[in-house]
Length: 352
Ligand SMILES: *[C@@H]1O[C@H](CO)[C@@H](O)[C@H](O)[C@H]1NC(C)=O
Ligand SMILES: *[C@@H]1O[C@H](CO)[C@@H](O)[C@H](O)[C@H]1NC(C)=O
Ligand SMILES: *[C@@H]1O[C@H](CO)[C@@H](O)[C@H](O)[C@H]1NC(C)=O
View 1 (cartoon, protein in one colour):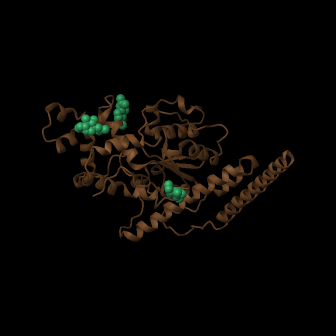
View 2 (cartoon, rainbow, N blue to C red):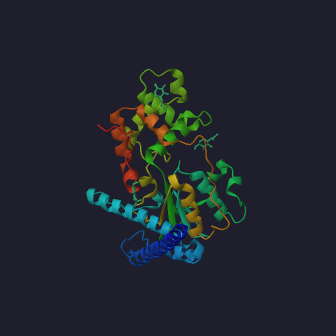
View 3 (cartoon, helix red, strand yellow):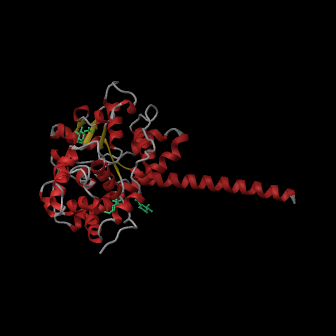
């Protein structure tokens, strides 16, 4: 009895080993074929070409056998995300007649690191302060070595970083073609509520209250007090939603970057990002970028659990306070971000 049990255990261990080996080589085969059939996009675009694909760097890194399987599964995941964006762009361009090319003005969110050949499109409310800190360390020539030493206000001083729109057209094209380009995205409504909480419910920064709050109160509050009209400090989420979906707001020009869509900020259909990171998997994705950039050994992405972080259930609460018509209108406004980055429609959403 004991003998057969041992025998059985030994057998199952062998089975497990065979299975693991099979699975391992299967993943390798997928990885191999994926890189073999990587479409060469060279020459398809006129103004801003993008033939660069990261697997070259992934392969270099992956040469270390202990990292290989972890690395190739990340490579597969990011290939799937890129394919999803490309697929959504094709569907989008088929359904819309609008054709446009990028101008340098469209590139002001793209932070450039020449040293490591990186381009990061910053999206406010998606770990953007920390990414700017990391970019300052990467480009800073030794001034800072720890991202967390950099005060938040310093990370947002524009002259501390270099942006792609500051280069000549030829330099822009060269960088778009050969640099590793990445961005970080987040569930669109979570990002929106995070922006609202940060800019309208906190007392410490009155510049948004003056710039947007006073206008929102004037337009959307019927019995506003003099004080509210003057300070714009107590904008309700419902009023903010009204402001966002009002056609008059669209006519005023582009939305403020804190609530503008990623689609409009980063142009994912024109700029073919090598890597789409997600806030939901921030740490893994960020450290993967750093490894691809060749600095994975010396630099970790600063993450810490912020207790004030906007969550899905918090977002649901804010949405429970607005009408189903506003739900539909907001979904319409942020639809491309939901589609491009594969976020499903939230369960709390009421569409009419
Ligand atoms: C999209 O999301 C679904 C559900 O969350 C997931 O199963 C699928 O793998 C995702 N696709 C991509 C390309 O990320
Ligand atoms: C308030 O926000 C504005 C715009 O983002 C910024 O320029 C300013 O430095 C902020 N002030 C404080 C005290 O945080
Ligand atoms: C929802 O609306 C009520 C009444 O206006 C308000 O007291 C509450 O704070 C709101 N909740 C959220 C999460 O906005």
